[in-house]
Structure formats: structure tokens, C-alpha cells
Image 1 (cartoon, one colour):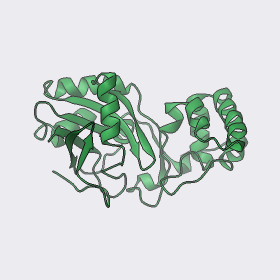
Image 2 (cartoon, rainbow, N blue to C red):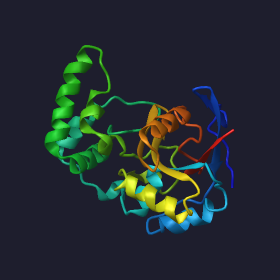
Image 3 (cartoon, one colour):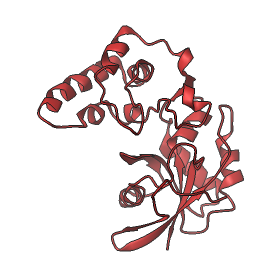
Length: 232
């Protein structure tokens, strides 16, 4: 089931002097209505061993929770069109830089919080400081994925929100796998990443984020939404 690392990325990482294997698991495309537990049993149950950490991309968790929306179904308000114009575009994804993703951020986080985040970011950006918008808007805004040309269909025409209750999902999946490994729901891209929920302690989450910092599995046509971290 192993896939390949993202272009130019190694399948091992060294953190604090220890070497970790980063084993991608290639799967079919997850669709709305799929059962996450059945998906994990199908692709990961025979791959993990004791001491592993299975990491699951937040996108497939959200999709199985019914939190993906076709762009054509979203009707952005005027405020979403206005705010989206001021979002810095990056080569790694659309983020909230289109009215449809901004509209979903307004719904997810609440209009007051998004407006406050935008106002603070406008001021601090003028002084050369970046990242305040997402620091204030929070993980729900940061986790929203918009369509890109590199995204696997049908999600190249969809907006996917962050997952609900990622810590509870991680605990359930660990139990599903017989407690053999830890589980983490992660939001990783080429700009960095976050551990949204896991069965690890805080030190373990920081270590996992460092191991995955360079986005070894990619997030497009690699079709590897699962991976295993194993001490080498």
C-alpha cells in the first residue's frame, strides 16, 4: 500500500537526533458517504505495528463527516467577496483567497471573529508581520481547503472544512486498531502544519509536527491521505 513521497522529499526525517521513517499509504479517493472506520480498517489495519503513529489527513476525516461542499453550492455574501480580495495568495493553495472559501470561514468562525482577525492583520501586515489573521481566526479557518488544479477530482471543484472533534476521532481510531499505535489527525501543507487532534501527549504532537514539517506525502494526486511514522 505504500506510496511515494512528495517531489524532492525524503521518506525519513531526523528530529532531536532520532531518525523516523515516514511511510505513505496509497488509497482510493475518499468520497462523501464513506465510512472512515471501514476505510482505516481497509488500508491501515494491516500496515501498523506496535509503537507506530498513524497520521490521517484532516481532509478525509472532514469528507466522511459530510463537511465538503461543491463550489457551485456556495453563495458568498458581499463581505466574503470584499475580504477575499485582501488574502495573500500562495503557490500552495487558495486558502481563503476566493469568495467561496471566505464565505465558509465566515460561517465556521463567525463574522465578528473574521472581521477582527482581518482588521488586526491589516494593521500588523503594514509593519511587516505576517500570520496574525490565522492566529486570531483559529484552526477552523486555517483548516479550510479550497479547490486547486492539483487537487484530485471531485475536490478540485469543492471546499472542504476542517474536521469535527479530531481528538475524539483519533481516540476512536486507536481503539479500532486494537490500541497498537497512536493516531493523529493532521493538517499539513507546504507552509507547515498543525496536529488537530491525537492520542499523543503534547511533546509527542510537537515531535510529530516536526517530523512532518516538510509535507513528505504531498496533498494532491499522490493519493496518500494516510501515513505511518515509525522509529527507524
